[in-house]
Length: 255
Image 1 (cartoon, one colour):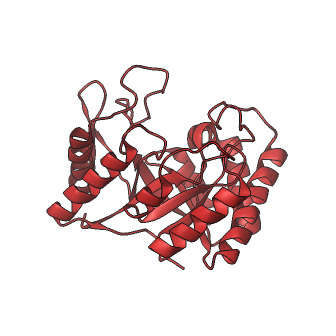
Image 2 (tube, rainbow, N blue to C red):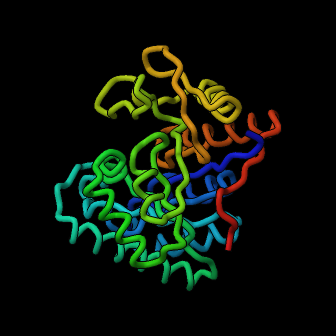
């Protein structure tokens, strides 16, 4: 692979509470997953982040979530499909308006946290998210976990999809993310992480947590903006990619 998208979860501060360094990350990544207020993000902060993304030429995506600010969207909620579809419509609509005010557009949707993990394998909730996207804008791209059934479900519904891998997360031998509750689930060494991402971009493989080699077909790599050392990790991935002749380019054209 000669090109790869780098994305990060941004706009996740709330009021006086700041999370991550959005300005620094936007100078590195090619796509920005921007919170829509349900797990994090206040209107002023979201607006600032969208404007900064536009200024940096980063493609903007709606980072939709369960309604769970207290749990930062990382608690699994068993809500009705009707409510979930409406929540997705509401969040995309809000970010679309902010993006229009900032002179850019929303090009894709990436669910956050527990919702992302749930819909990867739960067809019921997955379809509810897909229905919400289709109701707002069928041209939006769904970003989902590489190798997960949600990608085929979305394709069958008529959505374009992009498969995502995680730079700073460990994988099981089945190609699933290791639960954050388990030791070793989050990676921190930027050199190790960069080596893994070069392996992924070049050969489509990663080393699972048990040492086995797994196939991961991905067009985008996520560096979590709230992870310790996130900026150093993203910079090292970008440095290594440039040294290896792998271009950093979004899967969608910027507005």
